[in-house]
Length: 131
Image (cartoon, rainbow, N blue to C red; front, side, top):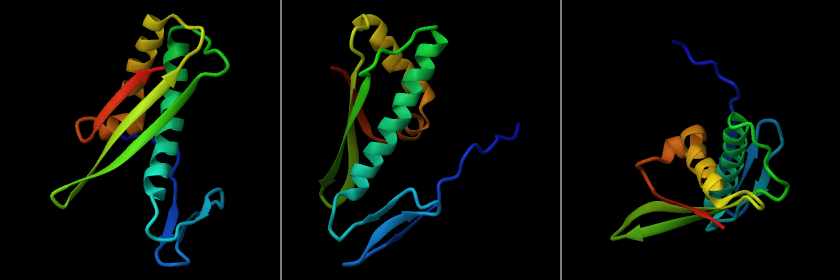
C-alpha cells in the first residue's frame, strides 16, 4: 500500500548572528540568533497544533463537539546527561465543560492519531495532563 502525501513542509535554517528559519511558502520567517531555544518552542507549537487536531478527530469519531476554550499547552524540555542531549515533554490539555473521564479518553485517543505523538512514542518521556 502506498501512502498519499497530504502536505510537505519545507524549511531552510541558517546559523549565526543573522540566523533564522524560513518556510518555502513564507508562512514561517523567524530570526534565531544562537544560542536560542527556538527549536524546542517550534517543536512544542507544531506538536500542540497537531495534538489539538487529533483531539478534534477523536471527538468527532465519538460524535462530540469540543467546547470553545479547548487548548493544549506544550512544554518541551531540552535535557543533558553526561554530554547526551535528549527531550522530554508535557502536554497540558484543557477541555472545559467535558466530563473528566471523557476528556481523558479524548487525550489518550489523540496519541494514537497525532503523527507527532506517533513519532515520539517510545523515544522521549511524555506526560499528558488534563488541566
